[in-house]
Length: 313
Image 1 (cartoon, one colour):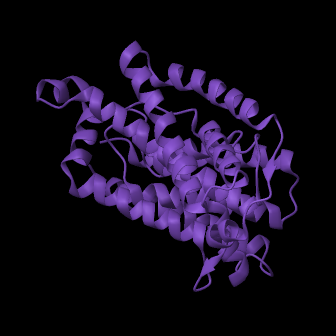
Image 2 (cartoon, one colour):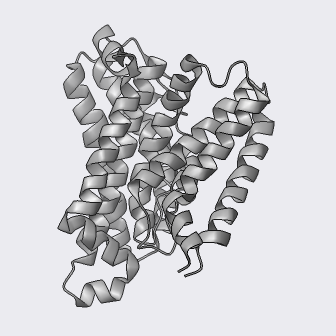
Image 3 (cartoon, helix red, strand yellow):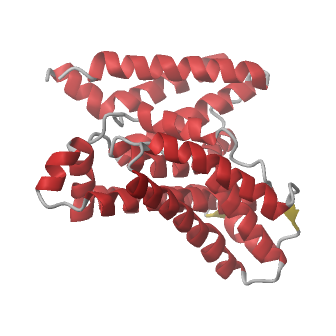
């Protein structure tokens, strides 16, 4: 692998982010680089980063999770229902965000293991199932009227840094440690690199498949709780289409669809790229339907550039 290819693998995603920041700084010089707007970029990116961190793991084993948006919505609704019913906010978060996310992720992992089908098929189906359950549980209506302690704790700031940003960074650090410093992390990379070789070397492939989907569900569940706190309501339509941004963040961050390749820090930068694009287009008053076109085009360009420079070994 040439020096250029090694450099791109290490810093390519960051270079893309720098180019996008410079571009929007030129197009919107009066607003984009203001401190309050930069904080808003990180705040907008926090949900995408959490979803992308979870999505990273199924992609790392050459799979995918299309249900993260629906898990976000259902976890938010469960949390909202518990809060309105008078549950302690901490307990509501643990059951709604952590518990529901883990349970739904485990369902995905168990179905993949039991049926032997590709995760694309399984999560395509569970995405519809979870969204349907969200509408059933919520009655297709938003849930609101939460205690102030909940919204203040999870939608506020600590030392001027928004809590969702802190949560996303803490989760990223924990998952970075998992992937780089633990045997579980090394085994997950091995399963993604060569599933059969991992099996014959004694790695429990089904167990690690279950774990990666549970991690994906957990991250989506936490994103659902934070989204609910930010909005002050649990929306049954929350997270619609968010799986696209999660997958794009992971891929822009250099995670290979063929498995076995990717890094947590680059996924975080990938999420920031998506958030920066969205923020910059809003500042330029680009209508939402045009934003989708621009966002899709920029994603294709970014991924194509990454593959052109960094994929040949």
